[in-house]
Amino acid sequence: MEESKLFLFTFLAALGGVIPPGLVNMTVAKSCVERGKRSGVFVALGASTIVLIQSFLAILLSKYILGHPYVNKMLLRVGLVVFLILMVFFFIQAKKNKKINTAKKSKAGKSYLKGLTIAVFNVFPIPYFVALSTAFAPENAKYDTVDMVIFASAACLGTFVTLYGYVAGFTKIEKHTQSFSKYSNYFMAGLMFVLVVITLIRIFKPFS
Image 1 (cartoon, rainbow, N blue to C red):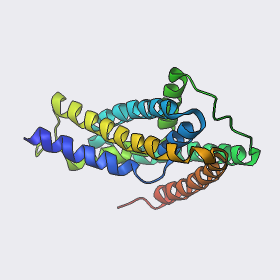
Image 2: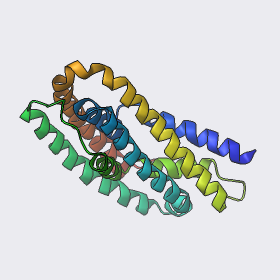
Image 3: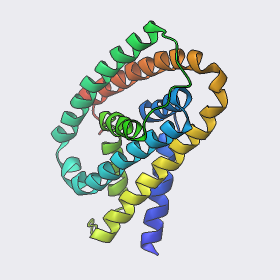
Image 4: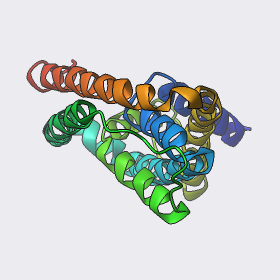
């Protein structure tokens, strides 16, 4: 019964955490409209694989990170550098305004690797899953192996379900591929700027 609750709550938390437009789901949407639904699905699979690893590590790291604030600050500084790089990258891509060939298809392996890479850059899920694993921890604050597998699997599945929703939804705007590609790059550059600001605030004014 406790395992079922752990799975359900983690699944819903992971599903809800990916619904707002962000780095990973916008990448899935872009891949879908530029290279087809199949590419978007494999990007989603790649990203979900990284979430599986991140959420599993989060349980192992939760007690240590929450007990050592400087470790969390280090992760935020790494994220700050990554978001700055991505902000510049997406802005340059948007300014290019190159024509997209919608007929061009991407290999499954390449799309999967893209999903892995973009999810690795997205470091925010780590503290998110650390907080979740702490909130859902048993009374003795210790997870056994089964609990860790359930938590990680639920986080992975919840993420994939939401990302697949982006795949299904964004295929409907295929006629506007070029326009979507251009303005989504601007959107993602703006999103990176917002994340940079949020990260700076969290570094210099950490939550109590």
